[in-house]
Structure formats: structure tokens, C-alpha cells
Amino acid sequence: MCQEEWWTLYQDAVLETDRDQLGTRIRAAQQAIAARESFGEQLPADERIALSNASAALIILQQEHRR
Image (cartoon, rainbow, N blue to C red; front, side, top):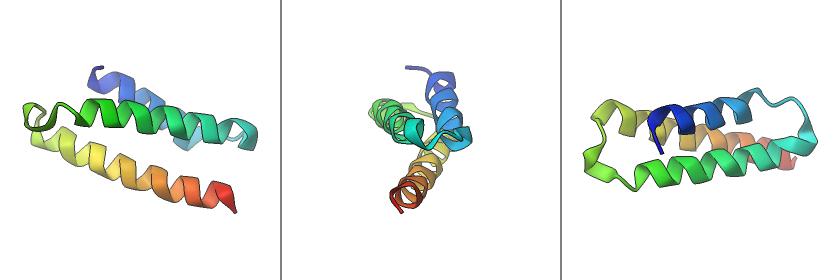
């Protein structure tokens, strides 16, 4: 999975307005991010930071979705 794929799925989740689809989008983005993070030190530092930030944002979005 390349950077563009996880980023697209992350954006899809963040921009989703249909509450029925939001959970699915969040999970897809989280899986894509986890797959990309599995490359660890092979990734550039700026992408590792972006992955971490995106993961944190998805956790918040998920918590808000559950309310």
C-alpha cells in the first residue's frame, strides 16, 4: 500500500457525512494506516508523523461517532 492509498481512505473517513457509512470508512482508514505503519523505519519520518496524526484523528472521530 502506498502513501496515497491510506491518505485517500483517511480523507474519505474524515469527510464522510453519512453516519451509517462513517464507521466503515473509519475502519478502512485504520486498517490502511496500520498496513502502512508496518513498514516502520523504511518510511520517511514525515510520513510516520502523518500516519500517527491520522491515527489519532481517527480515534477522536470514532469516539464522536459513537456518541
